[in-house]
Image (cartoon, rainbow, N blue to C red; front, top):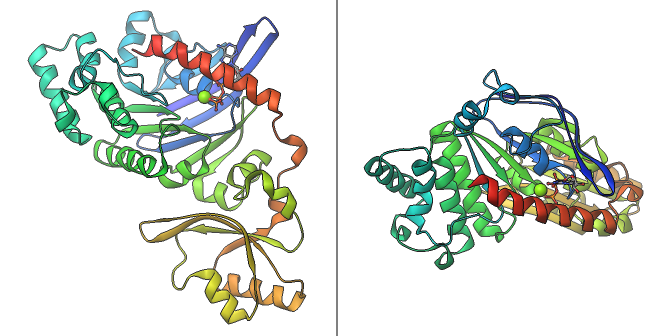
Amino acid sequence: MIELKDLNKSFRTAAGRVDAVSDVNLRIDDGDIFGIIGFSGAGKSTLVRCINLLERPTSGQVIIDGVDLCALNRKRLRAERRSIGMIFQQFNLLSQRTVEANVRYPLEIAGVPKAEAAERAAELLDMVDLTEKARAYPAQLSGGQKQRVAIARALATNPRIILCDEATSALDPITTRSILDLLKRLNEQLGVTIVVITHEMKVVEQICDRVAVMAEGRIVEQGNVRDVFLKPQSETAKRLIDPGQSELSVYNTPNTLRLAFTGEESGDPVISDMTVKCDVMVSILAANTENIGGKTFGQMLIQLPEDPAAQQRIKAYLDGRNIFYETAESALPNPASAPSADDTAQAERARLSAQARIEGEAL
Ligand SMILES: Nc1ncnc2c1ncn2[C@@H]1O[C@H](COP(=O)(O)OP(=O)(O)OP(=O)(O)O)[C@@H](O)[C@H]1O
Ligand SMILES: [Mg+2]
């Protein structure tokens, strides 16, 4: 179990103090796939890097299976870190080494005898379906294949926990799906706890059991993915699941409904069935739905007809099919709280510099 208690992390910069993580309390149970979601600059990377102490918290505790990592000496911390694997957005593979040698690398550092390390590397490459690329170099691989190598490498020392910082955001949607499926499979087969950092609700929907939403260094909401997805409480969560993204403010009228599909609805396609049964026309203003394993997940924003009786029929229909909906007004974020371009640019610069530091430290 991972427990973060009253965790704070501040940075001193020329421009003053930056509170990247503030008063975070979080519990992640063994075997969970836990999502941490938020916009750029929210503090997600800093928080996840505190879990393996790549970033030392300014105050608070990081307790893993009852052990407070901050209280350990260097040697014990190194040993503990072996039980925490990490994968990154940019894969961070060693370009001069083959795929097999990349996977073997953490085992070499841990002093595992050569023959045993080679055997383990072969087993890991098989697990991520890359046996035929063992002798290839990273430059010869696709993004998805590189991330598979990174996953195999993260698993080399049999970690109990894997931290994934935006592990799929450099990948196209289909490759993203395959990497998330792989993580899910590893979670099920090996029982490894996975912490997934992302800014995409889709990633959370696809594999996470629980999710925490971060904004300005704080956890502003947490719970089961389904609850947060259906009834987001915080402005940030509402914006993150907003299917129309920024255009949505245009649609902020009382005649707009947000529908949420959680894969539990069955039967005929909702919109076409509804237009026939309710004898109404509705326009789909924005949709972000996906078919996963024959079930529909996602959000849709529809424009209702003006006629109150027709609106009632639609709501009764949705109630009858047990489909979650709410008026867009209540679902909409307050535009004033959207991050400014300046904030975004600053966070991007910070992310890039953080990334560069990670490369040095994590390998
Ligand atoms: N080493 C650092 N020195 C100074 N400030 C930092 C450092 N690392 C992060 N920050 C600041 O901390 C805040 C959180 O950054 P962090 O990288 O954790 O955000 P994030 O949620 O991971 O963003 P992104 O989605 O862009 O990766 C930002 O304001 C950032 O500028
Ligand atoms: Mg980040």
